[in-house]
Length: 412
Image (cartoon, rainbow, N blue to C red; front, top):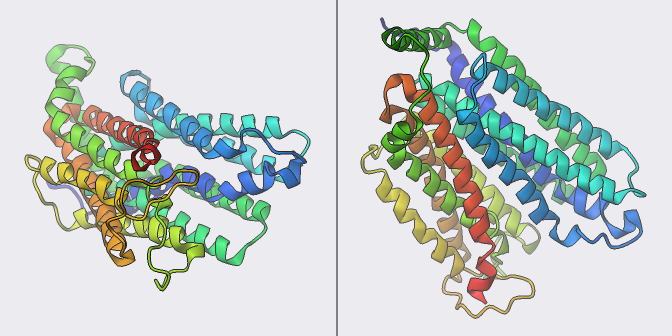
């Protein structure tokens, strides 16, 4: 029986929205970084130099990534009634509550309690990203039953979220708004997107196209149960071995991307003073906006072009390792570090080209690898393979972030 048509692309748009929702909370926290460092924890607000201020970003990164990775892996092995529905609903609900609390804290005068504000913020980040790890992992498991372009829709949504955050950040910087008011609006925008994700998820069972694949998955599970007489636990080791080439591809794509973006790229300074982008917004445009826009384009391409195939995808994925030395040889400077490594790439246009191709390849190859992973195993194990791939994605991100701490030592 042929599947029905995805009328008005409603299923595609739904998962695109969820892709945006997965990263919107974190992106809004990062966009509002000035609210934390230049307002709530600043000496002018609390009356003294806050001891954790200089490493605020490092604390934020570790409090976000470690729980996300741990919970993403745990989500694969923990059995729960209702399968993925309860996990998705509860995880979105938890993040919504965190953002309501964050908005409340923004409105509260915390000048006399900076320690409480700092640690409550870190706790919010831990809770938010723990829930988000489950949310992201479950969404990838859910779409494993659908054609590959729906996996690409989630990745595209991730990158749309990043592009939106970059544009909002750039506008805020140029218009220099009130940091407190800007942050509240960032958090409200994230809250709106999360509520939209909540609504669209419950609308999915009403969609004829989605229901067709959902019923097909249930039939496959029922046949497997009939042949064994009981519901068996997925053979995790077997699934991992069969899907390993694509899991490695997913991991390596995100490892390379996060090894250079944003930590390394954010430290690259303008080489030519006559370059058309001003010093004031150079990093915002050449690092954040460039990456997010071109990664968005890259993750949109698999909707129309699927190449190379799963057997040879490892070749372009491995070739991307060249981006690490390429960026290191750009005009990368770190405060307090005397650069001994020579600057070989002194042209801002070449740096832009390197950044754009890195971003396009990141969006494109990550989409392909995530699309291919469920197809490497038996149909009844596709969901588990997709969830393991999502955990590999977060593991690649975390490992890339860790390795990025080495770059100041490498150039010095």
